[in-house]
Amino acid sequence: MAEDKKRCFWCNLKNPVYIKYHDEEWGVPNFSEGYLYEMLLLESFQAGLSWECVLNKREAFREAFDGFDMHAVSNYGDSKLQELLGNKAIIRNRLKLRAAVENSKIFGNIQKEFGSFRNYLFSFNGGATAYEIGKTTNELSDAISADLQKRGMKFVGSTIIYSYLQAIGMIYSHDADCFLHKQCADDSFS
Image (tube, rainbow, N blue to C red; front, side, top):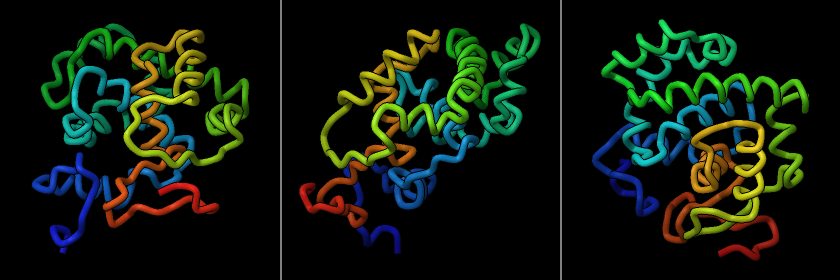
């Protein structure tokens, strides 16, 4: 039973969507291009809000953003943005919606430059997993955030990128008393 397991302090045990995300997705390495794009888009909407709020709207975002199709989102014009602003099922922040379109274009440019967004991310640390608890930024999130901002992305500050890296499994941060906590291969993490 889900309630019998000790989870990270932030996991709302009254929200089955959050429990499933915590148990099956958060911190699990997933570097498929579609997932990397989806999570970056969703994380950009988190700025100033809780991840739980965004996660609860994930399926509505999926529907509104053409199944998280980067090419479709890259081509959204003013009429689509107006449609999104009227969609009460998603977060309707005009700046974040415009950023989603521009960030999608930049994501595609990065894929072309590096061969994949995964290659881009791995260019910062070789793809190694960081094991750490209790942080909201680190040198890796600082570097990736700075580079994405230099390329023109918005809503990708170091804290958002740190959360993103946790989500996709480049940073592993399950609490020490969480049933999913594990140590890194050299046992230096606890």
